Length: 287
Image 1: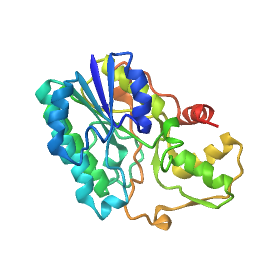
Image 2 (image 1 turned 90 degrees about the vertical axis):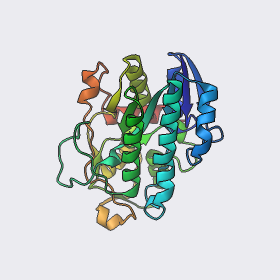
Image 3 (image 1 turned 60 degrees about the vertical axis):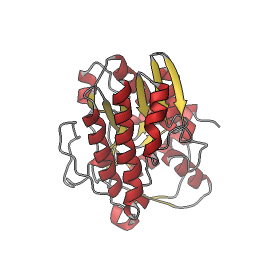
């Protein structure tokens, strides 16, 4: 089996590639080989590669910036994905495409995890672009697989540009600066190593359609920050605030916890609790 991975150098891609190698030959791709913002060049690259599976970890994920440049978000997350899905269908490749919990948020009173059958309702341009990307990926071929996940962080991202939420919290705390973190957005922080392992199992089960893949449990960003500092043995000047106080340009879902019941029903064990995954990350990240 030949498996192409776009976004192979990102947090999720770096955890996926070595695990996918158990299934066959892995071809890592970057934006140099395929740029979703340049859809006219996609078909030729896919035709030349002729993979059996094409895994897309690439996306426009500048949530706040998408509010003022939605056309850039849609260029990558919709039109680029549409061309990629079409090219995969042409060569008979299965497309695995990653999406986000930000396809939810319109139901502000929600307190029960969302299943794959629940109606989405994004509250940001980014969320809308990712939801539309899901539709075009699934519409292209019934054998395609779309995976929604949430709050990703990974070891490979710890040294990259911007790092991730965990690294940001650790860096600011060590600088002795005060931290004001939102405490009214409920989700599930997820370790890329765990999401990658579950993705490989879904491929082994020849899964198709839409699946939610996250670690277990629920947290706010403030609760995650507090747990980071507890596990890392750091004292931090940490204060909970509301989303209104933070006042980000883009709205975030007040509740976007994803149910993984379909995942487990498909034979993939539930991912470990997010607190255990965080402990593993802190133990595996470079010193």
